[in-house]
Length: 390
Ligand code: FEO
Figure 1 (cartoon, helix red, strand yellow):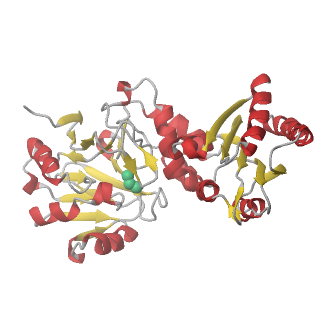
Figure 2 (cartoon, helix red, strand yellow; figure 1 turned 135 degrees about the vertical axis):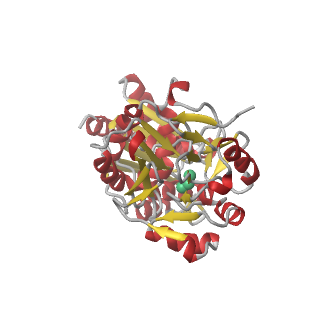
Figure 3 (cartoon, protein in one colour; figure 1 turned 135 degrees about the horizontal axis):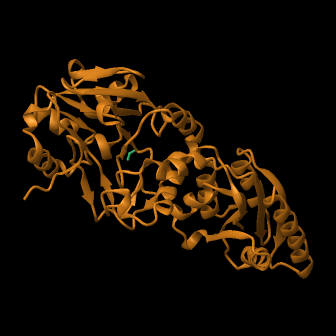
């Protein structure tokens, strides 16, 4: 049975579905597994676009063999050098001793360091360069920091197909085309939040570069192939610009429900006023969902107590996660509590103060919140609702 699917004229899907993978980057969960998309372009000089995660080399080679003799392949394009896409390069270049690796200049350095590729086998390309596949041609579009410095896109000119590696990707082992999914946004947003959010300005540059390109098919390196490119490009146009919505994301840690009592007070009021929010008790939350909500939330309400002489370690983790992702949120409310000595608020400022957030108010309580404390929290909530409307 021929399992390698022709997804475009002379273009074959040679990727691997990893149904069982449950974590990525030791950070985000993969409830639907993931895919390592690799593509084979049939031409007089056949080329592969990206490879697969280590451990899947033999299955991947078998897939390629269903469409061409893998010894005939002349080029392996490395759009990105992270091991989930480039990890099978040493295997393939050992198997096929004539094939050459195509990479950006930064990619060349990473290929030497990560994969021990012989320098003489690397062809370096820069923005706008082309490589002839005989009867077809690939053009390269530099896309640095999406999400590593060496990243580039490849464009198959005769078929108007854009290969974008992680950009436009999402983690799922399901389906093949975007038409197999009713909902693209939630998976793509989780992915964007974790991987692309800190580099939104570079994403905007890439979107500007490709906006006038005729694109009939987008082939990312995780998740579905887009026969309807506008479906994902419309979402990305919003996200790369950092457009936020009238909603708040709550991220908090609570030891004795003192922080939680303030969070309850705020979310009750938001609920009554039909203001959107997402609420994460960090102890029980999946960071992937927080990543997704940080993509377009206008305000962050962050709470953590002092434990011993420090902000609670989970609070430190959560605050650093937020800082690392550089979300487009404009406003913050900070909540902390303590028993006998306060230090969480300073740690919070030290970490979150690095972000361009306007702190519209903060509340520190000693032990349980008094009625007076909660009235102050009500005032903070009023301010928050006004700011969310801006
Ligand atoms: Fe999917 Fe950055 O690798």
